[in-house]
Image (cartoon, rainbow, N blue to C red; front, side, top):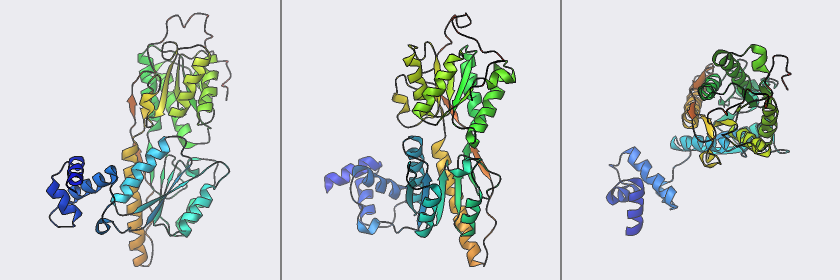
Length: 366
């Protein structure tokens, strides 16, 4: 027991006496200190004493489109931790190819009596999807918050990164390195984050690189949000003479690196690649990926705060015989450029006939 106390105390950064007070449920310990000790127990793999196990304030659903892209587990971890600190129990529901749809997962969570739901990159981000499903959910009295993808048709809090600012960061970085032909690889155009990235990219290359609108649009390539999608999009952009490719996700960026290598090109000597998200472990790729960091911790915590406010409003409204009008705000968070090893100065001699330049008459490839 002494060794365990010492281990827990070292992990939590407190004295063994403090650990003992927490484990025995004694008063006189600050809430933050108590939380540090409980976190140390979890990290070291010790079971919490029964007296310290919190009673859940309710279930909160978290719906993600997939888990293959590491950005979604990252969001799930941040949101789950924030909900747990507030006494709620997170329930992760993930779509899979051929499996349950977002609507089916939503119905399942509602049937389980969740206090609220957080959607990450769901149908709310798809401009071709019917937004009425969310109004129906609202009509059932279930509060919800939406991450990545704003819609004026949905009355709910939204949490988003500034996609336009992200593209300006990327293009500014590449322009400073001397790149004159920069391409953009992203997913289907019907998604709101894609549309915003295109707007930011077009404005940036026109202002910073002096492109005409037609020339800028010729360097936008749509594909799928996957490694294979990034590979296909980057191949098309390399064919158009790009010396740098900005990708809408880190997974697409890894595909872009694969496309370059299949053509015998070195990253970053021959072509620079920028990702988007700064997913876990992405710093350890070969080369380490330069990327736009999506502020996941701040966004996840903001989503939880917004949901708890919605839950509180719903409960108070029910007590008074009616629910208040939900918030319709978008909380926008600034991204950050993280420079690593996949970007470098533009290769020399790229204006020669060895690479086909982009003309205003070229097709967009969309």
